[in-house]
Length: 210
Image (cartoon, rainbow, N blue to C red; front, side, top):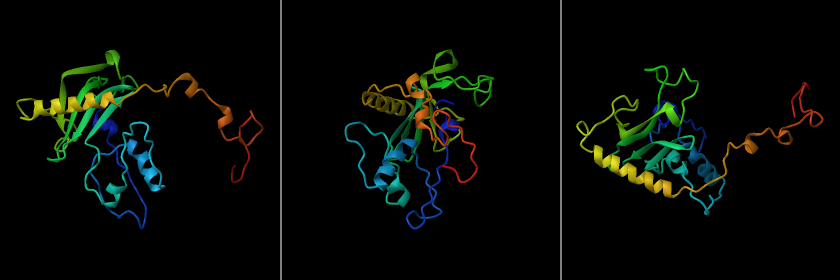
């Protein structure tokens, strides 16, 4: 679903008796990118210092030491294409969402790409918005009411601020090997558990397993 909330807004559940307070509900925007620095902090390590780490440890948020997410901006990609950006405005509590590109849902009027099987990230199956679409997620989490300069006095200021953040974000990017290249997705039988005689690794034995 590209950068739409219906494709990226999901709950996270944490359970750690004696460490995390029970029954707390946190409505702050976080990301899967936060899992890595969170685990690193929990095991007493340090994240690499030779590269940009986009995630932030969730420990202060989960333990109640911090009330706000460390993310002021989150950038939502579809494949390698940036479709949307989110601004958690610290001084107001508003959560703005700007869509630069959205997939064309199929059939028309549907909430997903049922007719295509998967929503495209680029090409003829997407719409580029100029000017971008703007939503205030704090009052419209379903993104049903796009804002306009007439309906939102801060429209141009928000679009400009998020656009500047996108430009700054892109300056931090550097080329990396393609994770879904043929060599990376090719089956590597020597990496799979083998309870037979390699390369015949089918497991038919009964019992408690490996």
